[in-house]
Length: 298
Length: 127
Image (tube, rainbow over all chains, first blue to last red; front, top):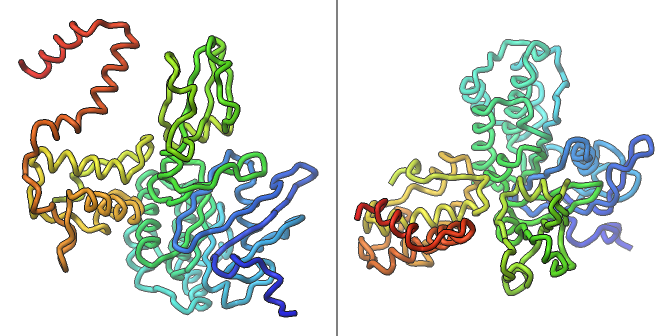
């Protein structure tokens, strides 16, 4: 039998895919079966509360840690046995870059650049200047925000087909964050770069992501287009005396102190909200992603 | 037209592509954008607002399908020539419909009769 047949069909078409990923640390489950497939050219924002396993998921998908169960593929290759060719098409920026801290900014970029066939040296010069980073400074002496910016420059300069960023905005100020989002958005649109980034700043995600996935209690709760998510889900509020009319199907259900109910509901296939929303006193609230996330992650 | 004429609120419940189409409708209905006027490129809008270019394309595509915009070969998007610069009263009224419904809902929640609300509105409108 041909060895290639061992892999699922959609694997080779997707830049990054995972199926049934399970992992735990010291007995507590972090991932309890995650399936995720990135569409080429998409920008996927991965949201989740702190400590929900976003970094673990990312590292397992890239083959940087071996999961207890499940598999991950990058450009159709098993993540744990990537070829150098596949590696040169990926750029990954960890949450706290620490590698090669004894080099200067320029030395590190020159060194790393040798491994990438499409290294964009002019981009580095202009971006270091624009982001006000002196090339002769030691990486170890940079602030966390500067260190993160250097690593982002390194990632962009390799002109990757797949760009994976773990909390890229964590140490950046609002101006630097906006610059990063602009760079991300234009890269995805023009070079067709596929992007996966994790964040807990939902408004960043709403600007540039084309898709959003919520990681909650070890599972992906939702994986959907950003626009579709906003149009398809809403909060239904029912006063206390009407809670018996609540639809049985809802993404989350919260009873408020006065006995009223807040539910996250979904449009049916005709685009209608559940019947209960039309009753007098009931209310449908359109939600931004942040509110939606808070409602279902609470 | 300049990309800065658009306001984008990423965290609003309304998707960004709808926000763009809605603003184009208003700008065209009010005559602030006139027939033949060129729109900023997808890249300019995406770069200025740091939003995904696919979102801008989607908005332009929808506005084109609605007849608000037309694609000029080699020049990009422009305000459609066939459209009267200033729309009829009923068309402009239709653009206000969702806000009017919102206002009516608030007034009902406050159990206000129609008359004082209308009086106040008339005053605001400068009647």
